[in-house]
Structure formats: structure tokens, C-alpha cells
Length: 157
Image (cartoon, rainbow, N blue to C red; front, side, top):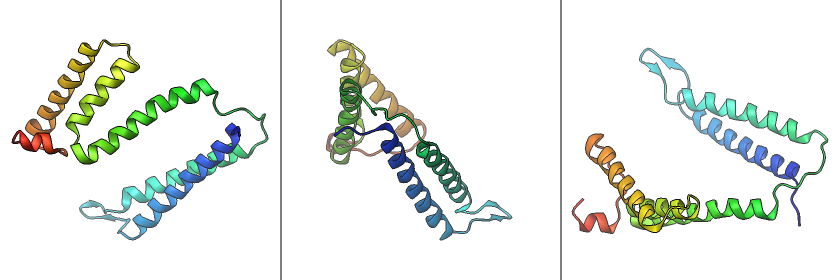
């Protein structure tokens, strides 16, 4: 089965509209006005939800126009997209159990090797150095603790 570009654009616009509706409904449960101290908690989400809804309607109108039936993606393009999506999904799953640092370093090294053509030693150094830099910036300088896994806890962090 070949999916047309038009079908996927309509599906994407519909999904965006559903998300916008959820944002709007959630923000309406909060105060959406402007108080003496500034915007209330639902102010920004309501406006962003309305903007997203407007964009999704425009996308639906654009996709509904008669157009040539283009194939959404060739097999090569889909394979390239999946080569980015699948490791990213694996990263998200691994972060659930291992925290952000170790999976992030492995992901960055893998992507530098796979898509950047880096050698494994250079890619590993990049992953480790970036992770250490993020740790220093977030944990020490900003004081914002990020999710840690068993390795960081074992090291006393």
C-alpha cells in the first residue's frame, strides 16, 4: 500500500487539530486572563492552542485542494527517516531506566558514527564530552537536576 502525500498531510493536520483542542480544553480549566501580577496560568496555553488550531485548519484546507497524487516518500527516503526515528525511540525508552546522561552519550556517539561518518573513538569522545558538559551546565551551574540512572546513583551523583 502506498500512502499519498495528501492523505498524510490530512492525517497530520487532523492530529494537530486534536492536540490543539486538547490544549485549549486544558487551558480553559485554568484562569486565562490577565491579573494585576501578569498573565494567569492558562493565558499562554489558550493562545497557543488557538494558534495551533488555526494552523491546523489552514493545513487541512491546503491538503483538501485537488492536487496530483504524489507518493509521500520513496523507499530510500523512508529508510533514512527510520534510521533517525528508531534510535531516537530507543533513546527515549532507555532514558526511562538509565536516566539522561548515559543513553544521551551513547545516542550522540552512535549518531555521529552512523550519520556523521565519525570514527568510533572520535564519536565516543564527542558523546562523553557533551554529556559531561551538560552535567556541568545543568547540575552544577544552573542547579537543575536531570534524570539520573543507576550508574550516576552508584557514583554518588
